[in-house]
Length: 479
Image 1 (cartoon, one colour):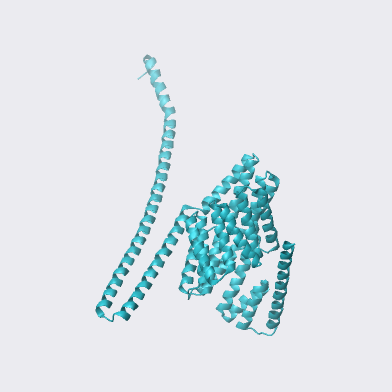
Image 2: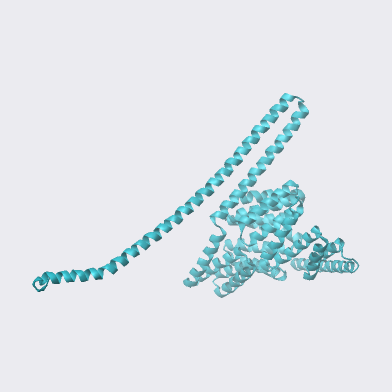
């Protein structure tokens, strides 16, 4: 009865929200009929596009923004269109629009610029390019810290934690998630708190602390139910399914996965379906229901390929390999294992891992530099206020200069090390290339000697035969 009441409440809220949105759409369309070509019309078009994502509305907004040279309107239209394309799985087009937005907004730090860095980083994340994802998340974090935007700072802490999670650096992941959670509690953002509790549950599950994972997933789920967040509820159901899967409770896992899938099928976000289908297929594999397993995994894999989500494609290949192995169809199992390994190596390359570590190190170093500079400025003010003395001021300035030189020396040393490492890498590649050339030349020399020996053998044998004839009957030879 309680569950029926909850479902009825959610349905009523959904219907009310739909009615409200339709009322807003009608109002905006009425205003547009009485608004000539102007920046105000662009703003109305963008507000309407936020509600119904109509291609014609967005197209008109972009065209009018360009005609009026209205950068803010154009940037908003590009953002709305890129969000629409992202939901549809057209990551390349969405990325192109966000990169254009980045050029428009780069002139000064702002929350819009931070949001664009976040959107670009997320798209690279979806495409499995974690190196570029990390670059953009760190740049966005710098912008957010400069304007003291705690909401965006928390968002980037969370995203950077996720990238560290991909690298298997779970201690660093938990550190960033907790920093993000503290900021969300400070600003009272319940929805974001639920997402972070969910992410912490994922990490504890990966560390095989399944009981703690379920605890965090449940906290997250309860917050999302209070907020009537269907998308978030679906995500929590999916993760609870994974937790029970690792407890070997496959029927309970299948129950939660199915709840998650039912919610996702009702929403217009196909990219979210792939992992859930694959998870359901994996569970059927462990229940020895192989036909259902293959059907679900292949459905998820096809969606992932269409969306270009390499992480889910990799997961699909891995699960197909395991399922075929359990079915003792080892040819198919081996084929998908090779596909899984190739994609895994391309995503988690050493170069990418090293780059992410370097980006994190650079960010930490820059943050320390800013803290030192800020601390020095505070000390300078204190000295001037308490001791209006030239001697003390000169000592402070001297210390500031010394510290600055030390910082410069550290940075230069760090850069020199980077240059040396790159040069060593290039030298190594040159040596390997030269070795290959020498191997080729040695092989060609051996082949040439074989040909020469073969070609000389026949005439030499003829000469040897004639000499033997002479030796046998010299009396028959004339002068």
